[in-house]
Each structure stands twice: as structure tokens, then as C-alpha cells.
Image (cartoon, rainbow, N blue to C red):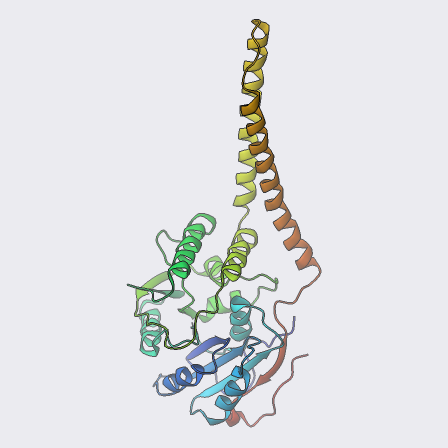
Amino acid sequence: MSAAPSAAAGPAAPALSFVIPVYRGARTIGEVVDAIAGLRVDGGHEVVLVNDGSPDDSGEVCRALTRRTDVAVTLVDLSRNFGEHNAVLAGLRVARGAHVVTMDDDLQNPIEEAMRLYRHALAGGWDVVFSRYPEKHHSAWRNLGSRFANRVADWLLDKPPGLYLSSFRCIARLVVDHVVSFEGPFPYVDGLILQAAGRIDSLLVEHRAREQGRSNYTVRKLVRLWLNLFVGFSVKPLRVATATGLGCTLLGALATVAVVVEALRGGTPPGWASLAAVTLVLSGLQLTMLGVIGEYVGSLVVTANRRPQSVVREIVRPAADAREPERAP
């Protein structure tokens, strides 16, 4: 995997880093960065933009921001689209701040709310502070998908009950260093955070309506994210498959005993149509359980083949660093 270390040599590390994955964000990322540049943070702050193989001119817009912005802006240019969580990890490896705020490029996360997350993390000594919203201005299906993912995470992950997992969060360096140590091709950032964070809190923040464009998340991407959560961070689905198989076996044994007893009494066991239906249901269960096992096996094969988590084409440092753009090995 081609990636930069989490703490680059150069100027002293800032107090706060903003990591922003950029995909189809050419029209909005400039406004986001300008708002961050206007902040005053004790100890300084920086911005890390990750161009996740965006098909528009986001890469060139981000490159221009590294030259013209008052705040230090670093561009991590990925070779193609790897997905939001992979892009966030690529950015976290470059971020140097004692705390890191991760956020989207679509202006739905107000910058002043990012500072509230940061101040709350500092005041309470929290390892991570997640945002939660009184109202989310996403489409109905996107909100439904988010609620489903959080319900699944309640079951699969060691997550405090009721905690809402959000991509808008503030993470302490201790947790960041653990998260970036993950090298698998299917990261789930919240799962990695929960593995290391002991002091977890959430803060109610504003969520604005999207001003331009539409969500980059599709049903396919959400399903892939759910599969990463299922397969990469828990063996509970396998245990459910085992319990279901044992339950069906027990029911089958009881039904067999009942049929034998009825046959010995001289009766003809009725219900061959229902028996066929039950056979079809059990066959479907078997195929489903094989599919679950196949997902785990497939994930292991892809990981064993060292599929890259991300490939960094180029890292463009702030102009003030007076360094040539770095090319990843």
C-alpha cells in the first residue's frame, strides 16, 4: 500500500488537522477551506484534502488551494476512487494534528460546529467526539440507510448504546495512530475508532441542507459499506449462521420423529406440498449461510493477495513548506 506516514517531517505539528475526502467537490471545497482558513486555533491548524479519484476537476481545485490559502493545505491525490473510508485513512496518515476533525466536502457540516467538536474533545479529554443531529438533511433512503447501519453497529461492534456514528467527528492523536495502523483493503473507520477509543462522547450539532449537487453515496456503496462492517469487524454473522443451522437441524429431527411415529400407527403422513415448501426454505437458508461464509472467505483471499487500501499518486505540500511535490513510492 502506498501511503505517507502519519507524522511528516517539517514544521511543528499543529494542534488541529482537518481531513476532508473530496469527490465531485470542485464547486464546494474552496468555500469549505476558506471557512477553515478564517479560524483562529491556539497551536495552529492545517487542512488535508484527499482527492479520491474525482472525475471532475476537484484535483486541480485542491492543488490551487495548496498555493493560495492562508492556512496550510496538503493535497493527497489518490490514483483512482477507493471509497470514503479508504480516503479518510489516507488523509489521517498525512495529518499531523494532536486532534483531527474528519468532515465532508459538501458544506453540510458548518465549520463553527467543527470547532465545537474540537473544544468539547479538549475540555473533556475525550478520545473521540461524534456529531449527532436534531435533523439530517439527506434523502429519505440515505437517512434510512444510516439508521440501519447504526442499528447493525449496535449489534456487531462494542459501541455504547445509542451512540450515533457519524463521519463528522473529532479524534485524538492516540486513536488516530491506532486507526492508521490498519492495512486491510476494507476499512471501516468507525469500527477502527471503537477498537481503541475508551472515552467516547457525542455532541448535538447543526446539519445543513446540501447547497449544490447530490449525495455521492449510492445504494451500492451503502451495501458495500454494510458488508465491510459485517465481515471486517465481527464474527457474529457466522455465529448466527451456526445457530440457525443447529436450530433447523433440531426442528428437522423432531419432524422426523413425528413422521415415524405417525407411520407406525398406520397413518399416511400428510402434507407433501408443505414438505416441499419447507425444503425450499431450508435450501434457501443453507445458500444464505454459504453466502455469509463466502463473504468472509472472499475477504480473506483479497486481503491475502494484498489488494491496496489506497494508492497515493502524489502528495502536494503547502507552498509555504518550500518543498517539491512528493511522489509516493
